[in-house]
Length: 330
Image 1 (cartoon, rainbow, N blue to C red):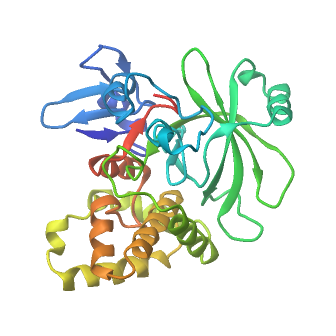
Image 2 (image 1 turned 180 degrees about the vertical axis):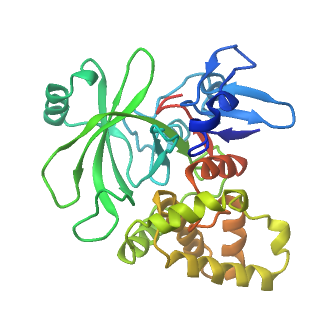
């Protein structure tokens, strides 16, 4: 099965094609929801049901939400694996065009400072009664850019409904600024969790290598590109993940790595940030062997940074062991 969200623009012409009922609990799955789906069986599973199977891999008996406080003790690594952390991808939306905006987490989710909590709730009535959390993030967006780098880095605030578990992006403070900027309205958030955390099947996550990859990508970042977005839309049928069988020898993988590095220099869209950073990360951790780096990319981030739309990102990464959550907790 693979993760799935509504395809960009598709909701304007065929929203009923996406809508379905969960084949486990019969709950309605709307065009704004994520789900797991088997195309061959025409079988759909909602986020509530899928999270019971996938969301807590390796966590025995009890569910620890990712918005709970981080506990660094080694014996808690498995429990902490279920919480939002660096390298995860927030999926914001969809908007009226069925488009999700991808934001890369570069920090761990934690409770917001009480002063910020009060400030947000005072000016945004919709989130009163909710819990407010924050996390360092970085993104490429048409609307804003950073002061020191082109990509927009910020401390981003999220509100979580205690009853439903729904999560929303509500505000941020840009890096280098002290001004709290509120969203016009709360933006619904889903979460794509990477498998390099304990108990999820991937190689051990290297925080230092991730920060190095992030810094390299950010320092060479370019402005968001409408041309790249249009290219991704027009080539959506060709934007699926790379097939490792097409790169069966070391020469083919060396050529692939060169091609990916060339694509890193192209102007990005929102999905490009996560793809570029993670591919650089695998190049760093496999630096002693470039062929090994290419194999890691083909296994865990087999996407082209210059033409992958958010719906394709979710679909392909879920095949690689990334876990889709309908909100921050489930």
